[in-house]
Length: 392
Image (tube, rainbow, N blue to C red; front, side, top):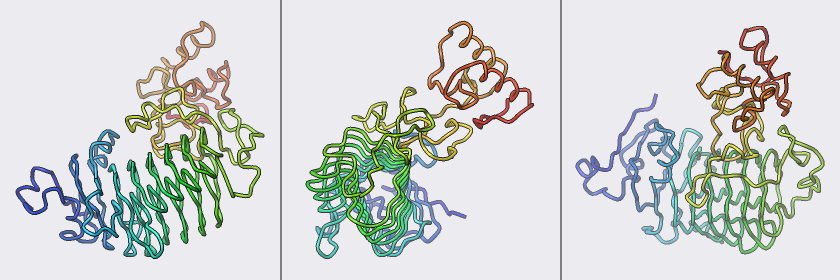
């Protein structure tokens, strides 16, 4: 079990007077393996080195699940103690998956010197480390390679993050080299590389990339993803408006060839990647929630972790849209009111819910009498739903 170390900004002044403005360094000095450190909203000038500790460092997003908490808990890496170690966060001592970073905005890092280059402005993972990095906004960092995140050895889990307006020579948003990595449910937005891979560059690595939104990035080659080497699988992602190509060097003509359709009946390549505007709520304010009209809803792979909320498929991007199939009245249940609502849509031209998939109870992406039959049978307990919504 985790032992909680509660760090609240006002209390830190009393308990650790010398650590004001250095709150995040507390994990490496005062905690033990298995501890959890909760950090209050605020601006912290810090360059955090986990030093091999198996701990969870989290903002209050861990408890409130409010994305505004991520935006308001900021670690600014612009004042490093050592100029050659200027990543905002460093994992370099063999950390494993029990080492977790969750719920922060990381900004103004310029990378850490690894022989030959500065890597990972926002986060550097090296030394065969395999931490878990989730629900962070990594913005306006820079490095020679991997402006937002650089992985150089190890097998981290990188999920549900937004990499925004980072810059590098190669891999503006992220670089992956000498590693085995799963990159899922991330947003890559307005990252820039001088040369290759505006959003992401893949070196000698084995990489799974799925359910990511890669939009509005730029580079001389591969504004989206540049494949320099390695083995990769890119599926169920969205690519849109990336300068000088969504892909370069990947050696697979099927990527980007929209010859089929995905679950939502949108044009897709054979890997179920789509090429549409993401439909974010307010990306200028780092709000990468999806509007209810977004085509990224239900366009991902697998059943949502938030099921029964989240529809019948995962969404593409950072944050799952919270709707329930069959719950047209949005009261948290599937009941007779929803049956009546669906009948009114079909026979009386009543307003269709947003997202429209809430009314598509048989998952064929057509609203028809068949959906009425499915919802009645399911509500009465006569049959299972193919769309995985909860009974009553």
